[in-house]
View 1: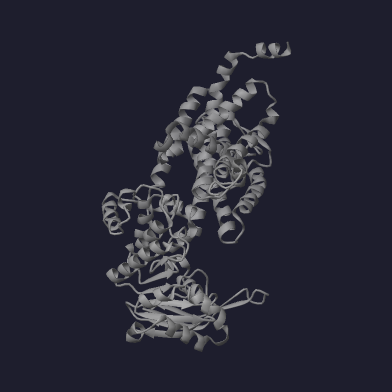
View 2 (view 1 turned 90 degrees about the vertical axis):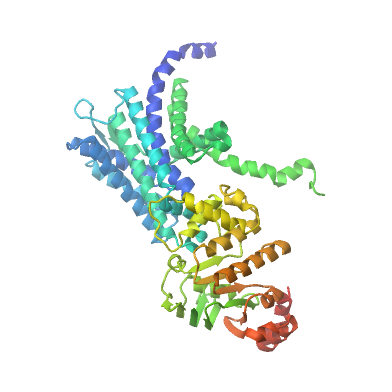
Amino acid sequence: MSIAVYFSSLSLLKLLKNMPGGIAQGLIWGLMALGVYITFRLLDVADLTVDGSFTTGGACTVMLILAGWPAWAALLVAVLAGVAAGFCTGMLHTKLGIPAILAGILTQFSLYSINLHIMGMAANKAVSVDKFSLILSSRSVPMAILTGFLIALALVSLFYWYFGTEQGSALRATGSNGAMSRAQGIDVDAMKVLGLSISNGVVALSGGLMAQYQGFADINMGRGAIVIGLAAVIIGEVVGRALLGKRLNFYGTLSFTVIGGVLYYAVVVIVLWLKLNSNDLKLFTAIIVAVFLSVPYLRDQSKTSFARLKKKGGSPNA
Amino acid sequence: MLKLEHLYKTFNPGTINQKVALSDLSLHLNPGDFVTVIGGNGAGKSTMLNAIAGVWAVDSGRIILDGQDVTALPEHKRANFIGRVFQDPMMGTAPNMQLEENLALAMRRGQRRGLGWGVTKAEREVYREKLKTLNLGLEDRMTVKVGLLSGGQRQALTLLMASLQKPKLLLLDEHTAALDPATAAKVLDLSDRIVAENQLTALMITHNMTDAIKHGNRLIMMNEGQIILDISGEEKKQLTKQMLMDKFAELAGTQVESDQVLLSK
């Protein structure tokens, strides 16, 4: 009985109404996922700086727009601030020998104070689309989707080009095999710093766009960004491989990273529509990421493992 | 071409794991020297190669390559002059990158890596021709990820990569030790050919005494971080395994029993 009441209370129309907003937000998070992809997949580093640099991007953008800067110039400064954050993490890691994951945590932790300073010691700063000219806003969702799509297209193309260049190849080689890269004359430390800087620049751009979309910057807006970014990267990979298989080239991989962000947010909209407790969203996301991260490992294990031998009741070569 | 002057290196100094790896090591290579290096475990063979490559800084001494003092240069800068092949076939190539991308990375050793294309059409043809000479059919698999190749194929590829930009010095660190005997023989032949064709100066570590005698124009034996035997020219051509074993017993003294087993592997 109560189940029937529950289902009758769900309106498909409401889902359709909320979906475009989810797609717009998903596109913005998808941009952030591109940054996470650079560190996580290409450099083979889990960079936790992004939780801080996402907020930094939002804070810089909002404060500069409030100070009368045009939105595009504010975003540019936000990107530079993100680059600086990534640079700090890179230097902590390469010059001071701090493990990459800890270096990222340190930068992220310090950014909390810095972000508060940027926002004039306020935890929250609003920027109204009525008073300022913003690049995108939740007030006009279709335009926001179009703008987000165009920015994503430009970034994916830019990265596709860059990682095909000599310098981009050297960066990818650094993540693939450090010893080999050094033996080929690549300055591995410089490449790591460069990769972390580029990545956090993109993340800050995404934060700046998100602040404009939602109309405010919040000190906690970047919390868990790394997990959402990883979720987008992984969902994108799984879906990309399922749809394109071996035809999935680098352009496709980058595109599906953004699509992964959109799919993630579509799921979020559905979860909210089902009236599940939105406070459980982070738990839900963490479980999804854990499951997908473990799939490759478990797949290998099922091929060559003690479990398999046990199932067969002995060695296949016995 | 290469001068090592009084090199010293001690690992973990002042701890219980202290290990003197190089002790007053000096060596002078002439251009075109192809030197095989033998010695027991812990004799300092790999340490010498790593010192030359700049994997870490030596404690004291000087390393001079083609007249230039490289002692203070970091590894990636020395790589401009040095080609290397490692013992582990996984170590010399980038597994997540395509075969042609790996070659392109090696082709740019010693050059500025800018924003030009990572692999150009013209160089693809060069690579195809070079790969054909390996006789492994790799010329038809240029866009395959290197991680999918076998150990032998990866070692052959690493050798090719080390010679794409002619190095002043080629370092081969037991580069056939992880391969099966047939593949090892092939990779050794290829090494001979690449050294001869490019007139390279090379150092090759091996645990196989027969290989050490058969290849190169000069042989050095190491013990306790020093060179204890240096044979070249006619004298090397006359060498036999038994003579080497006797020499080792004579020079190394007390450790003979254990090391003889190892050296005759």
